[in-house]
Image (cartoon, rainbow, N blue to C red; front, side, top):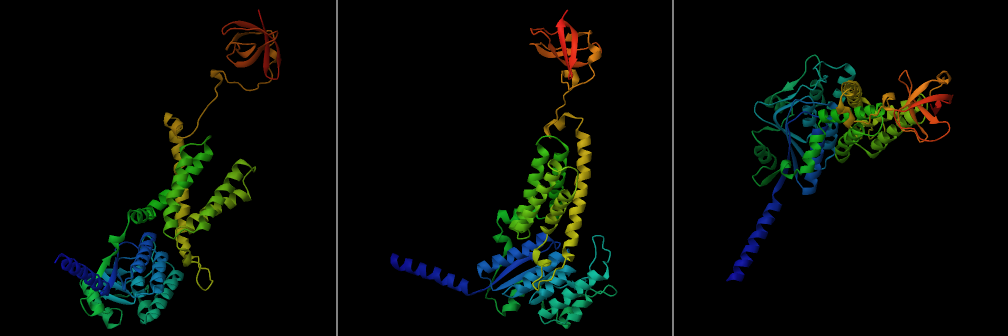
Length: 441
């Protein structure tokens, strides 16, 4: 009997696994944030994980008011190149860059009360950008709509600065921009498959702690802080002697900036190499070559370019047809310049505030050789001290230091050798190359 029970148990487990494998698998990626480098990596990573698990459909759960055009273009391109069908579920809002991403999907389903459209390009303050930016967006919208068999004129109307188009679910269905109205992801999956034989896997369940950490470090605000750490640390280290906390801060900032971008497929190896080369050129200009010329300027340009290019996907400006489009790099370049300026001004203010306090001793090496402590340099014109009396400042064996009547501390040597203790009085008999030669009274 026990053998029969064991056989039956094994059979049921195998049957359950077979049924599970035969179900249609939807891989759900929840995109409910601004479109930026973080969301770009989220979607890209989700597509990779879905491929690894053999998902039949991608279910892109959208609720966004838009964001950066360059990041949206990368997401759009990734969706269009993806081999399996991508289903967009507009879970309330798909505005601006969100509309572009939705149109890139093979099918669109919308929730009651949701909207899609309003893809006019604006700046951070909401001001409409010049027509050349609108033209770029209109072209992407038309091309994306055509790629999925949708009316390109409707997509272009979403970028109209005079009468921008935004559609409800019913309106979107009437013009072929929505396949159905659903209230949740399960209804979407049921309409796509036409049955209940499906399973929905959530990307959140597959995210490792490393994935979440990288997502956090790619936040634009943190990236700006890391840039300020790099530039500010280098600036303070150059301005102060020794190797201390500023250099460590710059190194940590560089690691936090480039490591997640490299792992997230934003930064390429050549960008990191360019950054290191830029630092070497700047160091050579400061410590090896006189003045400030081609080497220093080239180093600054290399550092700025590497930081800016590491913020975006290279595919955005190196097109498949071999053309070069620098528009996606304009915003990252501005962020780098602003962050660098803020770091330099902040570093100057910080150094001035801390230099007069003991706290600065823990940040950078600071050592003063004061005359009152017996440190002296080569002083000329001491012949007039011949015949004057001086006091021994340090023990002389036979060399040491003496203190003159006017308080100066000078190097001195007993002319005829011997030893003189601190506090004794000597007579100056000669002066040569900044050194006094004395004898006992």
